[in-house]
Length: 382
Image 1 (cartoon, rainbow, N blue to C red):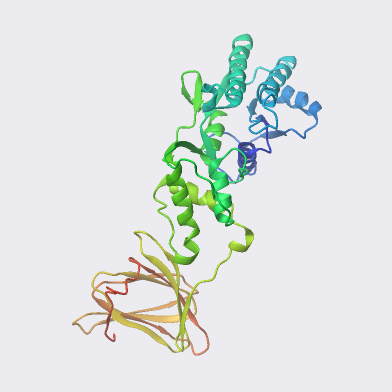
Image 2 (cartoon, one colour):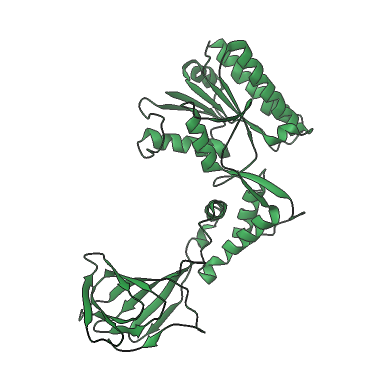
C-alpha cells in the first residue's frame, strides 16, 4: 500500500508518519494493516511541488493533514486550508486516481470565524469531490488534539501549559471553568491507521476519534502543576485514569533536558542505604535498599503492611518466622536469578548480605506509603 501524508511534518502528521514507519519495520504489530509493500510518501510545505503529482499518481490512500492554524493574515486561512485541499484534489483528478482521501477538519468548522469558514469550505470541497469522482472521503472534525511534539504557544492550550509549567514560565488562564473536549494524538493515529483498512468510526457524513476526554481548563492546569511537584514528593499520578496517563506523558515530553534527571534522598548509615524511588496514590511505594557485606537488615514484622523484596545484585538470605512460632523459612537469593519474595503480614523478617566483599542491592515494594504516625512496624529478631 502506498500512502501519501500531506502536512507530514506537522503535529499529527509526524506522529502518524512515525507510527507508519514502525509498522513498515515490523516494530508495531497491533494493527490490521499489512506492512508488506507499504510505502509512505511525505509531503509538506517545504517539499518540491512537483513531488505532489508523482505521489498522487501512485497513492492508494491520502491523509491530508496540511493546514494553517495561526497565519499572519486572516486571508491565509482560506489559502492554506481550502486552497491546498483544492490543489490536492485537482492533482488526484489529473492523475485519474480515485483512492480514498482523508481530510483533517475541526469542530470549529461550525463557527463563523475565518478559521472555521476555511475548514468548512475544505469539507464541502471534499464532499463535492466524492460526488463527482465516486472516491471515498473521510472528513474528521477533530476537537482539541494534544500529545507529544505539538508546538507550544501556537494553537494548543495543553502544549503551551505543559511547556511553560515544565520550563518554569508563567501561564495565563482566563476562565478555568471553560470545558475542553480533547483527543490524544496516539488515539488519533490509531484511528487513522484503522481507516486504511476501512475501520474508521463515522457519525453521518463525518468521521471521529472514538476516545474523547472532557475536562475543565482549570482541571488541566491543576493536573499539570501536580506533575511538576513529583520530582520532590516522588508521587506518580493516578495512571488508572486514561486522561491523566496521557496528559502526564505529554507533560514529560516538554521537560528541558536538565530536568530529565533529579536527585533522590539516600538515607545512609554504616549498614548501607535506603532510598525511596516512587510513591503512588493507592498502590504503595518502591524503594531500593543497599546492604553492606555481612549486614542484617529488617528484623521486624507488620500487622497489615506487606512487601516484596527483589534482589538485583549481590547474594543474600531472606528469613521469615511467624510470630509466636519457632519455624524459620529461608530463601537464598541473588542477582543472578531474579526472584520476588513476599513479606507476609504477621511474619517477622530480615535480609542478610552473605557476601564478604559485595553490596547487596534489593528493590523493595510496600503496599502502602510509609506513615511515621502509624508505621505498622514492630522490632523482633527472626
